[in-house]
Image 1 (cartoon, rainbow, N blue to C red):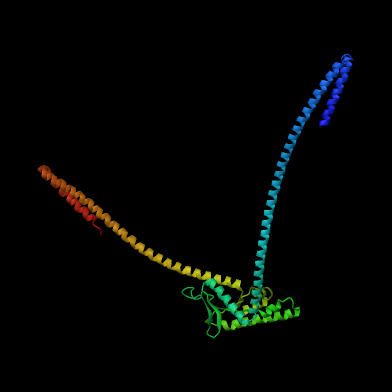
Image 2: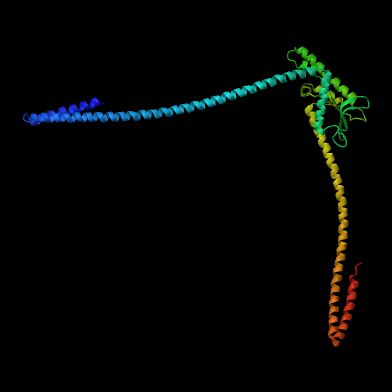
Length: 382
């Protein structure tokens, strides 16, 4: 930039010199040379001053540029650091969330493993017939307890009893004292599991599964016959009984694929119930019992209201009689007040010794007394 300016200045000086020579000629060449010398000195001085000022300005602009660049770089650096810190925090939180979820997954996996172990243990327990029978009885008692409360604390008259011994020596898992027309209903728990598990095992052949299905149907029929023969006693129980299946899968299997079992149980007066259907049945019976209690208390209330109505009629009759007596007494009091006023005036007249008026008032008093006697006779209550 400095060399460009200097070149322009020298070119300007050359052009000025040529013009001066053309205009003045050779006479004043010495003066021209002197002027040119002075002009050159001035130009050199101005050029030097320009270089100094230009250097200062250029240095100042460069320093400002450096400061601006430093400021911008600092801003960029600060933003980059903030962005890195935010991203690091987010990444750290994400990583911690991932670790936390992994821990939860590990805990869930441990629980699943424990549950699998418990299921295997439960399956091994349910392979025993006696254990299955106990499981069904406990499940039945749990449902009854939720519907009616404990057997020993469900009202003045027990609604059900557990392990009730009948007159034929059979022991029913539950005897339900339902309201008429249902009556006393025996409930017995059955859990035919072996042939059912073999029947639904997909790893077995079709022929084997059909054979086990036939065995399962025979098991159900045997249980129906046992309940019908043992727990339906004329004069002691209702002519119906309930077979409780503690597994919904068994109940669903019978209702979905074996309607002949439902008809067979119907003919033998045995109703098949799973946990859900038994809960619904017991809930309906509980509601009927509550309505019967409510109706009983409603009848008592109605009787008491009738008695209260009779007493209120007597109260009204006696109140009317008392009202008439009070009215008669008030009338007698008014008449007595009137007589008192007249006697008071009579004494006043006697005090004033007005004989003429006294004689006149004697006649009036006699007449008034006769009228009052007639009125008293008319107002005497019967």
